Amino acid sequence: MKPNYGYKYPRPAVTTDCVIFGFDLKESVLKILLIERGIEPFSGKMALPGGFIQIKTETDADGFVVSEKNETLYECAKRELCEETGLKINYMAELGTFSTCGRDPRGVVITDAYYALVNPSDVKGGDDALTAQWVNFHEVLEVIGHMPKGFRFLAFDHDEIVARAYRSLQEQICFEPIAFELLPEKFSMTAVQRVYEEVLGRQFDRRNFARKVLDSGVLDQLPHTGRNVYYSLNRERYEEMRSSGKRLKLIFV
Image (tube, rainbow, N blue to C red; front, side, top):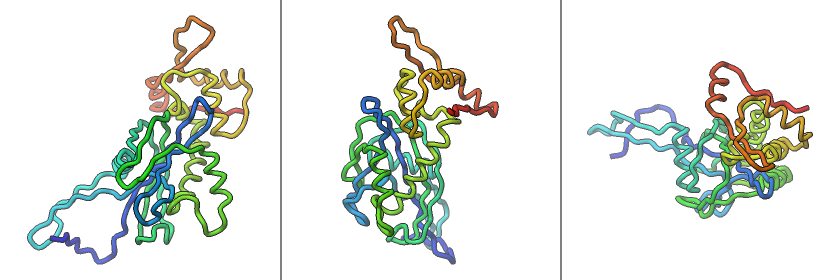
């Protein structure tokens, strides 16, 4: 029996979309994870991983809903990401909602967008995604910036979501140790500097950069015997810092 919600007003659909950033250490390039849509609308077009929130309901004999259990938006984002790419992530932050009229040709669809940072790994298209692949982010951003008015490179309004996610990443990277989510557990100071330079789009003095990062107090230097020095993020120390209300101030001038 079809559920009877008894609502006077139409109900919009709700989805989540994920902007996934990765950093290629070999190429020193910031990348973004995109899927190729396998269904309409926009079949064959590149897009962000995402989909509709799952709703489970129980109805009575008259078809009225007596109980309803929904997944949270965060749960929906992680599930869709795993289903469409096989990727599981540790860090994901809410970006905001997008509800521009006409953003989805199927009807009124509101999406809650997230962005995540990962050390890139192999991905594989699944569910309604034909393929999943890591793409050079700045090349994507350049294409988006040169699209004629009224046209979009990615499906739906994902061009706008990607642009906002990048602005958020640039703002947060100096106040949260999120840059280290793009790196393996063991990393060099050179690798850290490459991440910051790629994200912020500028070059830094090596010694001044290293001093600023080490003064933050969130890195542990690992034991070494050769010339190469490696570090790891001390998550416990960082969580203590954050719980006290303090923030990183990795502002480079």
